[in-house]
Length: 354
Ligand code: SF4
Image (cartoon, rainbow, N blue to C red; front, side, top):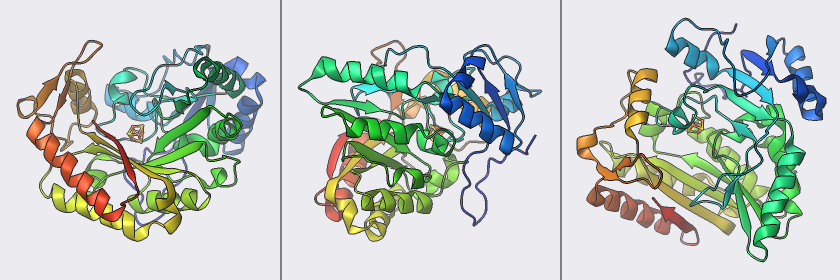
């Protein structure tokens, strides 16, 4: 098994994800995508096993819980998406479109820590045609309103695109949907295979960015800031609507300088095409009690501040509430970032701050 690389590789480019171990549901091999992934796995000499269900991988290697977690993050499971009922995805879209679950990134604050619980391995689904049929049904129900689908609710699909090609299929499908729109967000830069896809302006590609301190401290095993911005320039030049999600916005020593530099360097680096149709989404850092205890176990040395006494408790609609910044701090973050964005990108719209 390959060594587990959590640190960013020196000055080199971040390489596309190659799992250490792959599981296949036997029926997934009856789909062209499943077959293609199997061919790739054999060519790359990656060990593989069969499994009865992508939801029950019980024999993952690893001695301790932490070791199992790290190995799971480098384990790919290829299966069929059985539930074709989509979750809602407010505030960024009407529905979450499920093409993958789990992520090989190691962002300390990631909410998948909690939502995926004991199943942090990376699942990809081969029945994209059935998933698109279901999306067509959701679009029909809402005509004449537009229906937006978010493809990154449970994963980072750009990081998996070199393996699956699923985003390209969704983009081309949505290009033909008068009332359908696709959006996804990523911390990876593997967009080259999407650049010549027929998108018809119906897909907004957003990059998750942050200030240097946050990226350096909390986002191992993702693409660098420079790689993300270079990829953003490429998708803008390919005519895609572009967006940035600044999340999680973290209050730390020097945050004003850090976030001012972030917006300035976006403005200095992006090509003119980026400003044509540009959005920002702003999300302050939040955590639940469960997330805090999971993060402390999985990243015991993390510098992520999760002091409940310094936060405001926000009741959740479904059960457990979240700890966010007190109103004064949240307001300062919001107005500081909004002003910097307005200064450098006067035409861009800020979709929300939450
Ligand atoms: S890249 Fe996104 S989905 Fe992956 S671990 Fe980081 S925050 Fe989570």
